[in-house]
Amino acid sequence: MKKFFGACFSFCVVICSCSDTEAQAPAPTPGSTSFYDWFKNANISIRKSFDGSKKDEEKPANFFWGHDFHEKFDFTTIDAGLKISQIELLKHTNSALLFFPKLEWHKDGSNKDKKKSSFATGINAEFFPVRARTNGLPGGLKLAPFVLGSFDYQNDYIKKLRTIKPKGFLSFFSNATGLPGSSIRSGGLFFRYYPYTGFEYFQSTDSTSKRASYWTSRLFFELYPIAAGKGDFVQITFDYSYRVKVKDNLYQKGNVNWLSVGLNIYPDGKGKIGFGLDYSRGDDPANSFAETDKISFGLKLKF
Amino acid sequence: MPTKQQITTKVNGTIKDMTGLSPKPGNVLADAPLRMDSTSLANLALGLRNYVKGFDPEQTVTVTEVRKSGLTVEQLIDLIDKKLN
Image 1 (cartoon, chains in turn cyan, yellow):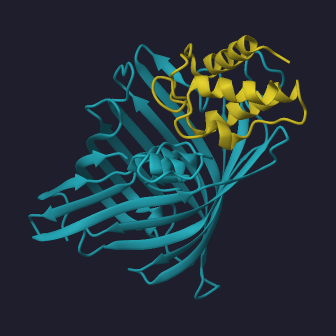
Image 2 (cartoon, rainbow over the protein chains, first blue to last red):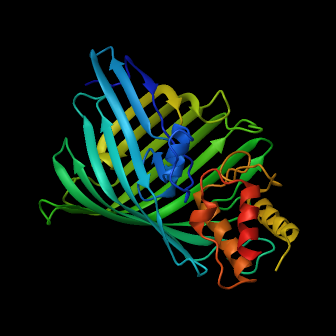
Image 3 (spheres, chains in turn purple, green):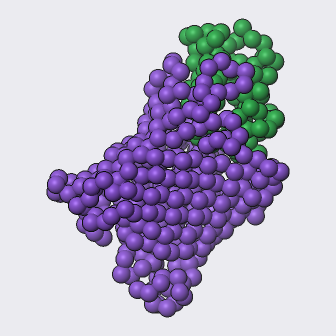
């Protein structure tokens, strides 16, 4: 297929997103809570992905339906991750270790010749060995490291490739303005960024000799460019990854990169209903590094 | 043990140091205007754990509690107060 967006109009996105926080709340009482509350109380989060790094937790899940007028076909694009509950260890130490199971589904039919469809399940982990320094509390580091990891099993239905994917990333957090993770405010503008570096390993479950590994560097930032007052009206997310090949006889690729930029507009300022634009380019890590260059637009709903 | 007013001062001061804003009781930690993400909430939990254990080593504050969906500043203060008083 030619450039998918040459004459493509995609519409109607359903984006479901619970808060990026977890609940340890009692079981919901039928009839007493909304659908949104039920999700929160049930300890469930839905996001675009839980790909072993926190950056993806800021992005809502995408369900796009579209029509390519040039090639005359309908398509769907789905990027959804489901996170269920979490287990916390080291509760009485100066550190925190958390695990949570997840399910992910990624599907892209916008390109007839390069369709993508994969399903993954796995466990994510977060480790905070030491907290960031805070005024009024003893201890802590000005720039505190933390580690994010995951162990996934993925089935790529298009390439008929099943893989296991352990990965781990190191990043840093600080309360000092300007450093990673800090809240950077100027007037109504809000900005936050995280750099990541880590190792990713992919191995075919059908042929153990087929494997790939990358040393990966990532940069994520989110920007709220408009004074929100009491709400969130516009959010911009930017995510760039560059993977340096260590070894690869699985995907037959060299170094790969991935760019994902999102624009979310919520006229109600509550982050529930809005419009969104997503642009992705590079080698899609959620779909066996399939080459991608697409833009999608649609209505967004948050529950 | 600290009074609730002392706990309020400590929690508000910690949040202000982390977000650059003076929190109001009804502010949800994860939402605008505070916008504390999952990493900053984990760090807030570890900081408050340090504070709580300074008074009662048997008590603790978990990341899961502080990341509770929709948790407000006021509810966080109540949580700490309940653990210490």
